[in-house]
Structures are given as C-alpha cells and as structure tokens.
Image 1 (cartoon, helix red, strand yellow):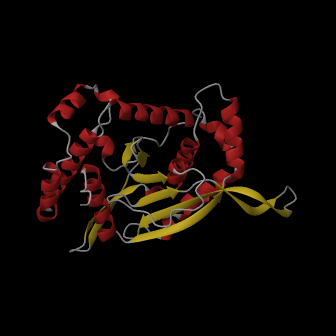
Image 2 (tube, helix red, strand yellow):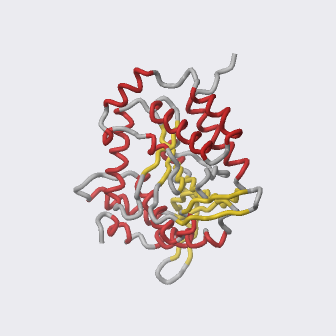
Image 3 (tube, rainbow, N blue to C red):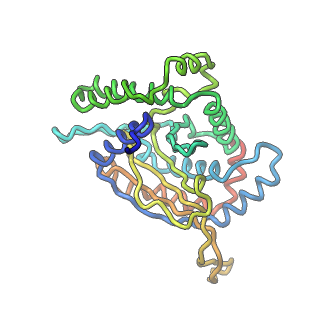
Length: 300
C-alpha cells in the first residue's frame, strides 16, 4: 500500500499544479563566475569581528541587489484567462520565499520579509532567528492554518468549484495537527514562532540547491514560478570549471574558476526576457566588483 499525501505534500501539490497549469514558464540557465567575490567574502568573513556569515547569506544579498536593478521581476500578477485581462502589481518591498530544509528531510517554503535594505549581517541575523523559530514550534500547525487560509481566500474570489475539494482534503486530513498541538503552538509568543503568514508567498522565490546538496555537480534546469509571483531563482552548488582570465593588460589565459549556475524562471504573461536582462547585468557587475561586499556589512 502506498503512502498517502500528508498536509505538506497536499499544499505543495496544490500550488505546483496551479503553477504548471496556469503559468507559461520561460527558463534561462546562467553560469556566473563568482571567483573574486567568493575569495573576497572569505577574506572579509575571516577578519570580521561580528557575526560569521554563510555563503547562502551572500548569495541572497547578491540576488536582492540584482532584483532592485530589475524591479519588474518583483511583482504579483492577476490574470483572467476567460476575459484575457490581467494586472501586474510591482512591489517595493522584497519578500523572499526560500525553501527550507528540515531535519526530517522535508522542505517547506518559508517567506523572509523586507529584505530590500538589509545588510549582510542583518540578513544572517534574520535567518538565524528564523531557524530558532522553527525549532520552537510544530511547523505543521502554521502550515495547516496557512493552507486553510489560502483555500478560503480562493473561495472568496469566486473559485468555489476549484477549491472545495481542496478544502475538504486539507480540513479533514488525518495528518493535520491535533487540538493539543494547536494549543501548545498558541502558547508560544508570536515573536518566537513561525506564523501562517510566514508560509504565504512572498514577492519572489529564491531556491539554493547548493545549501542542501553541497558539491553537487549539476544545476536546476526547470523551476516552478508560484503564482501570484512572476519570477524565481534557482542556484546550484559552487563548481570549479576552467575559464578565461584577463589580466590588467587584457591578456587572456585559462584558469580554474568558481562558477555558480543560476536558473532564472519567469511568467511569460507578465515578463519578457528584456525584463530579466538588468538582473543578469547587475549580477555580472557585482561579480566583477568584489569591493562592493565591504559596504554590505553595514549601511551606507
């Protein structure tokens, strides 16, 4: 007998099915030469007297700065396929939905709020605090409540037939948290636990496969764009590859470079490739100007 879907798999199945049945995806694989930036990051991290930072924090910051250069990608879409009408809402704050790997092997998307102006240290502190919140509570309680809230929201929009069965499937799921689980969760102060709102979609998804499978020789080829988001980033592990090096005299040679493969996926209803170009150009600029990292440790 097969294993039935639990609350998590139902939530993931619902959102990814919606993604691939409603969103026309375009993906672009981009290999970024991060050699100089990673070397500078290691130097700064070793010499820093404050909090030690992770590679994941650095990559999140790079993506945030690139998103700020391409504001069209940080948006939500509303689309009516019957009337062929739509609306794209550009959003100022950058809320990152990041798949979070749990000790039991499950991966649950957690949304990290208001990252647009955070320094590297502030990003690391936020992530560390989020990790503590996860340890403090039973994640299935806010996950269950977030799933029910999302489905009810769809019902209120008039999508009754689409969501009724989903509501029944979640509300009466045998793996849903017990009343005891909910009471224990409710006793935890709001500031010390993951809330249902932390499990709702942010403005953009950034998935770092390298933080889950370090040293994996490959890259993400296809990536979900979860509506109402219009853009998603998938990062692979840092890989050593031969590459062209230019010296001060513009002379070229071959050397070993540290490459980060990026999968950029977008909703073609909302964006054309031209909207992605400023993102790529900003990433290129950052990787060519490693001195920027020093300014990211504190506000300028």
